[in-house]
Length: 202
Image 1: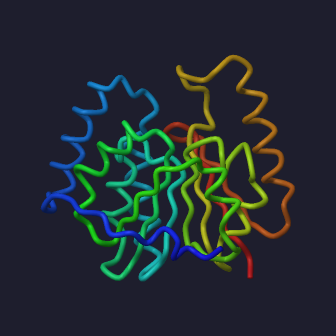
Image 2: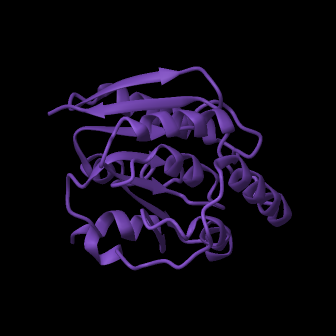
């Protein structure tokens, strides 16, 4: 299935500056008790990496309340596209209220595993995997969605307060798996919450 299935138009509010948007999102994020928002340093990195893909099509797995989404939109070129997926409607609705007016953004409220399985290969120039699907589940299928030269980005690879019991072994297995792959080039950064960037070879 091609990406066009998710190209619905999303109504929204007038555009604000990045700082205003991040502040508004942070207030609602705290009020909802959502404790899985990405670190601002990672957001700044995502803005730079998204900006390296002019006219690109980007994917975010795990919208949350939209903090990383806002950073990615800030780096996205005018002709670029960002698709963001999350199954938790109450969190994604926050992103929709504050970011839904941007015509470059498509928000998909569905299970990320189903989303990944439905797509054909080589559709995205950058993927930020911020949920289990696409990182610890369906990794092969997710990497196949990258175009040649496309980037795959994950965070939270250093211990975090909200990690479930035993999660370190899951992270270690993921890092080892990525290091063994021949079709990608990987760099791991002992920075912020722990970041990995991988590039798909031609």
